[in-house]
Image 1 (cartoon, rainbow, N blue to C red):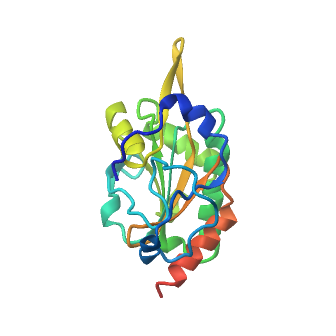
Image 2: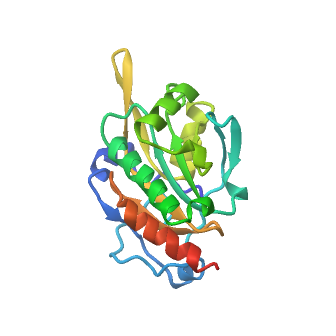
Length: 223
C-alpha cells in the first residue's frame, strides 16, 4: 500500500502520544478480509498505515543475522510487524520489549511456529548484523525459534520507501552534531496469513498478552 503522505513530519512528535488501536473509517467490506471483529473506537482521521481489513504491503528485505532474504508476500504465517531503530533511547525500548514478550507468549501457547515477528529497521547505517545481534540479546529475543526476523533495508532510500511509503510509519532523521536520532511514531501490525491487517496497535508498549490473544484467535479460526 503506497498512500500519499498526508501526515507531515512536523506532526510526528504529536503522533507518538496517541496510544491504543487507531482504526480509521472501517467500511463493511473490510470485515470480509479479516478474521477478528472490527476493533472498537471512533474514526481518527486517515492514517498513512494500513488498518483493519486492508491489504498489508508486500516488500522484500534482508535478515542480516540469518543471512537470508525475507519476502513478505510469500509468507504463509500470521505476522506481527513493527518498525524501529536499535539505538533508540526512548520509544523503541518498551516497543521491542513488548514484541519480544509477545514472541515468548506465542511460543508458550504453541502458536510460535505459525507466526513471524518482523522488526524493520529504518537505520540501516548503524543497524548492522552485529548491532542487531546485541539488540536481540538485550531484549531476550529467541532467534533460534526461527520465527523472528530483523529486516534491514540496504540504504536510507530503501528504508524510506519501505517504512514510510509502504508501512506508512513516518520518521525523520535529526542531526545531533556528530551523531543523529530519529523522530518517529510507533505502530505494530497483526496481519493474518492471507495478508490482511487484523489489528494496528498504536503506542510504545502494546500489550504482549493481547497480541498473543489476537494471534491465537486468528490462527484458531483457520483450523
